[in-house]
Amino acid sequence: MQAADVRRAVETAVSIASSLGLPVDDATVLHNSNKLAVRLRPCEALARVAPVGQQVAEFELELAQRLVGAGCPVAAPDPRVEPRVHERDGFVVTLWTYHPPVTTQDVNPADYADALARLHAGMRTLDVPAPHFTERIQQARTLVADRERTPGLSDADRVLLGDTLRDVGRFIRGPGAAKEQLLHGEPHPGNLLTTRHGLLFIDLETCCRGPVAFDLAHAPEAVGAHCPDVDEELLRACRLLVLAIITTWRWDREDQFPDGRRMGVEGLDRIRAAVS
Image (cartoon, rainbow, N blue to C red; front, side, top):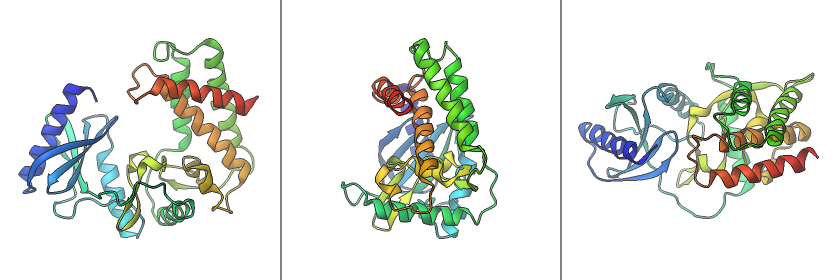
């Protein structure tokens, strides 16, 4: 969000939390992308705030409750208030349990793999409508083809991204394709919290359906060594696909990811090395 929108969004979150009886004297933005994550103190709640029309808060909230009920390692809505979506001043706000980090060290790969496996096991028990992972491929291909949205891409790099998205996507969906299920969608380290309750996944708005390898491709490579049932060739293809999708996003002229252009250049270099 832009600075002016951030200020309004934070004010809205504080107003809603206060109206629900949660004391708020301070609000700190922990993350700013398509939505805000705001720590509210002293009540120690986490507010997730997004512009109306650019969010799937209802889906995320309902899914989180069902996954918590299934014993999955996910962050839960704040139990002190009714779990619902609040809409005010052009924003939607949901309130979640805040978990202070208990360590600054990297997560042990075996523990990471175990948490992801338990999440997937719980997700297999749910019948939840969710987009297919191929929709993400199509969105990226559309962005690559739109020169106005991606003016910084050279013709050669535009072809590289477009061909990679098309060819790797076809391979993953080809003959003998892996069984598909509900996935987190982006279980990367930024969406994994180390808490006193163990590892917990957050940001469920990215959930989709696809092969487990697509989720695993978002985790550090060392995590894959603890997932012996995943096809290595499929996992390599999914890692390349995820890299191509993320690289495409970094070339969107509207992208606000910190240092995004540098990441976009590095992503292209890694894709060239992988397909050469």
